[in-house]
Image (tube, rainbow, N blue to C red):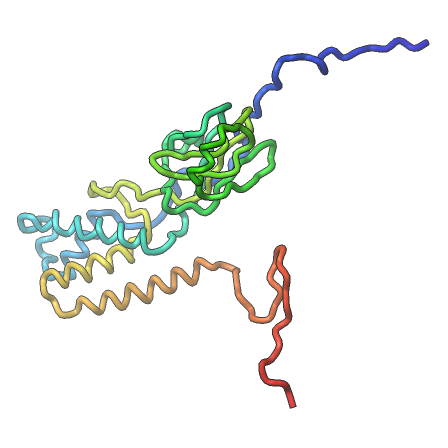
Length: 261
């Protein structure tokens, strides 16, 4: 009779080791090289366009502070107006048993950039290479049920909350979204977004401030440039009427409203 060998590891009461944090990087380098102009370069251009080119190296009292503020305000306004390319990244937080709240700044990525919670494009759970989306919003009535399990919902306030709290280490909370603006206060700091757009908006505001009549010319240039950049953001995506879109959808062939003769 053949001997039977039992594998007692199958009956061990020790919990399984938790999944490792995401080891495959889905991000490019933390900071990419670009040709964006610096604060000092843009301020010099503003002075030249406003008629103070001869004093660019020695601005009148208070003018450097004023023009810096125009440039900083312009970048902030443009960042909020449209989604900028090259600012989207993945951020992740290893899940902990029974923990619902996670600090925004404590993500596990080595990059120091912080996600802007107003510019999220995907939120979900990653475990063993399987990615599952979370539903936005946690209705307060769910707090009536003190349960644990696989997280299904999320909400961002001063931190990130998930519901329910994990009953075991279930991999990672993952967010895909855009990071905030980089520092733009020192002369050597570059703009985070396209510097020509920042320049045009700041120039329009500065010319209006100084009562120069061509301020609207630069607003028109800015609008045209923004439209072109937004169009370029579509990349290879195209909408062709009457063609079946990809994905799980029910497609109905369009029919003419007026019958053919």
